[in-house]
Length: 195
Image 1 (cartoon, rainbow, N blue to C red):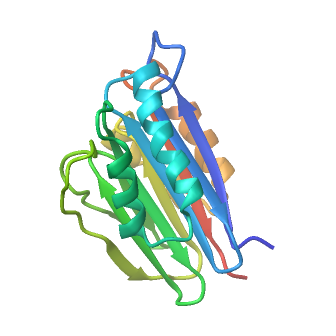
Image 2 (image 1 turned 180 degrees about the horizontal axis):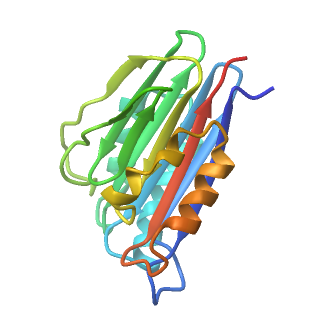
Image 3 (image 1 turned 180 degrees about the vertical axis):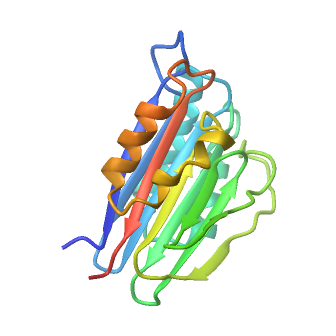
């Protein structure tokens, strides 16, 4: 039985047929990995850059967050560039790690509080750069929210993010958020529950 439940809301910027955001997640016996990439700009070329990164992550999911970010950065030389967040839960150590480069947001939610992660500045475009990885102990019954910059601060303040059902979180977001999207928008709701 899966320890992690995931639900995703995604919508392209108004006027675009294609969303420039790409995501990937998978759970194995020992870990869960989720990545969200937002290609710079919007539309087809943004999608190309974000999809390059996601394909690299799929092929290298077993590596550490640091190694994955380096591999992604190398492949983007000469491309449009992308912002990226990689989130991993290690079931064996009972911890999680996150690295966010650019304006991909990440929020942890426990029963009584929500905490937002401050991402590394900039974006990946093939140039060598420093970035930090945050490691924290895992608590049972935690929600994690990953999102691109199409999600507003006002929307993130809603109380439905405390819901235990990730499907209800993304459905509530879809119903209550702004329907005219000024930017590509992806919101990923993740629930860890080791029962």
